[in-house]
Amino acid sequence: MTVVVWVCGILLTVGAVLAVIRAEKGPSMLDRTIALDIVVTTMIAAVALYAAIERRTDVVPILVVLSLVGFVGSVTIARFAAVEPEGEGRVRTREEIAAQEAERMDAEDEAEGSRRTGRREGYDEHHGGGAEGEVRG
Amino acid sequence: MTQDQWTTVADVASAVCLLGGAFLAFAAGVGVLRFPDLLARMHAGTKPQVLGLALVLIGLALRLRSGGAVWALVLVAVFQMLTAPVAAHMVGRAGYRTGKVRSDLLVVDELTSDQERAQARDQGRPDDDEPRD
Image (tube, rainbow over the protein chains, first blue to last red):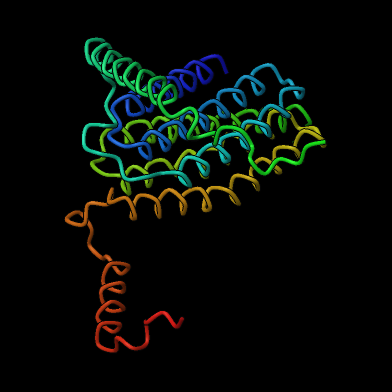
């Protein structure tokens, strides 16, 4: 039994690692979804293997929960899959992230600045000054 | 056969099932890494999800041999069989609509030809498709 457990463990581990590599490379979100689905299924198999070795029945609910979670995840991602621009699906390098972050900050500063001046100039217009038709007394 | 022999037989059968399930999970890992496009990867991903998981669960049931736990395992297997087609359909549809399907690798592509036929028919009779408002 020990040999069987070791062989099963190694096969499951290698399978999960290969799926994780695909999840890292995967050109699109859907490839990653499939890869992560395989990782979840391998996890279910690993928990089942553990339960089989130790003859434990109390981990069986974990199997039920994991099989539910894997389904919900892949369906949700597939539902919201959109056309991705070329190169979007790749993990960015540190320099690229820094450049994009700087660009975003600049854009935000600019937007903030224009919003402030815009408000100062157009303050009275937007709020219409005093209420002319106001009912007093 | 005695009780003892039956126990041994169940343990050996369980070991075989576990090995088969683990091998299918490994095959899925290799397939999902090596195959060229989305549909082929989906094909690889189905293996541990249905047959591999069923084998592992049968192996576990043969090893546990107690009523309540085995029913929970049946529940897991039935749930996987119900949800795997739904998830695969959603992923496949999303892949087709976002252009992830490589048509040069397909032998038969009935969806594209059907859509082209439908489009040609609509163009032939433009009045049918006009919005009526």
